[in-house]
Length: 265
Image (cartoon, rainbow, N blue to C red; front, side, top):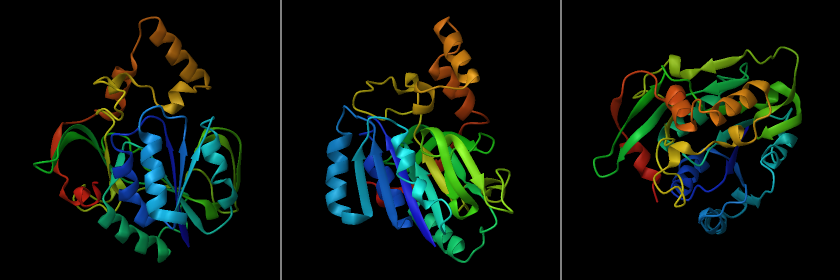
């Protein structure tokens, strides 16, 4: 059993180091595709690559779809692929427990696992607290896929783990998604993430991170996404309001983030 991390970033110098440090011990290998960042992201990644050696592979990519090519060869192997974003910080001690469960075969019959998330509106590092909205009731955006369940993942992939054509092995299909966040509370979860989506992710954001489209939206190709962008251009919902609808469901809560600070640089 192997766990491989895959990260696609673009201008993420605020949190990318924390995100990588929080997840890399969970993984046997960790790949980063830097999609032509213009802030200090590339500098940070080069430094981390020197520190972690062969375990951390960083590549400068012209196309976001190149990030999927970095993991395609693992299809059909006993490998779990862990998708991490530059604004996602994980509880590393909880991930260590999850790794033991994966190694014991607890999730072998599942295609994908989804965990607990706190979509952070305010981060207070001094108090070790964060305010935000939990998943559930928000939809979880964590990404952990069992590549032993598939023969291949080819076709037009907009980015790693999005789009394309998946060919499943006998006995598996796309419905085999286990929502671990329905089984555990935030405090008890082995797979939990601080999603810093409402905060500035880059020194270039200048306090306007909510207006940033993510990679999937910048490279929209489905009819639904194209129509959404067209409506936005005509004065419809902005990227900020879309983010509010997706990640700000349910009550605002305050949670301790002390375990997450163990990997903060």
